[in-house]
Image (cartoon, rainbow, N blue to C red; front, side, top):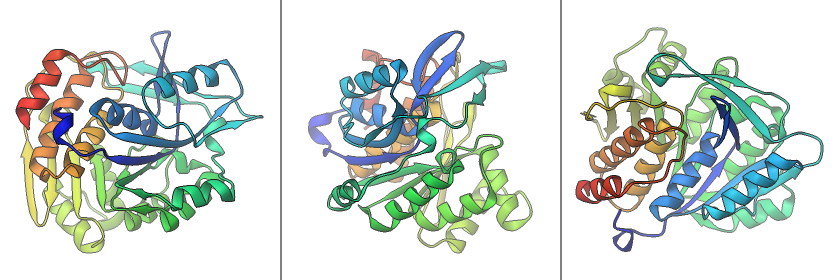
Length: 306
């Protein structure tokens, strides 16, 4: 990215920060942390709201997060619960199967009045939230207040469903509060069923969603090896990608989200932002882990795409 040509995006993410255990190796993970990490790599100024345990994994997570250039002022330390971990098994084509441990630190993200006021007193370009972190009542309460008090120009909802950790009520409430919606094809089918009782095609679903929720201005749908689609102001378009050899798809959607946000909020249109997002998401799928180092080739490709 030509960072000198793009503005310093101020992004705030909320939710899970954890370690993905993939083939015996521990990788930093959790969509809100992955997105903050990619935003930092791209040149933004991200801040994350999450919680870690007072344990060795928590220390490692905090140290690595700071080194990545993420503001850690709102990473809380839980005295009772451990730092979150997820066991990831890779099925065919690198598709992850998650075993997400419960009653961990990020299940209890509670901010005191001073922190709420500090966050509300700043202006943010974007506030990111997902579905998984809403699995605890404490988090839902914190998120509800953040959504009502945060001064953000854009509210980015990443549907990011994990089996057993979502309800129709949480999803519909999230749709009411977002301006940018991101999901994959399977999640689109789930939402279509929840709202309309049948599975609509992606283009029809986008139109119906924006009619039902006029607060949503942009919708992104990732389609794996088929690329991605974007909907804005009544226009639906698809972006194709060059086929790659997949290492694992863990974090590829998060890279897409970060690439889209950074480009879109820097003043580029939805089409360009979707292209950049697709390039970055595809690159991450070709590498192990959710936040690999950016190669010189990738950086050049991103610059040329702009």
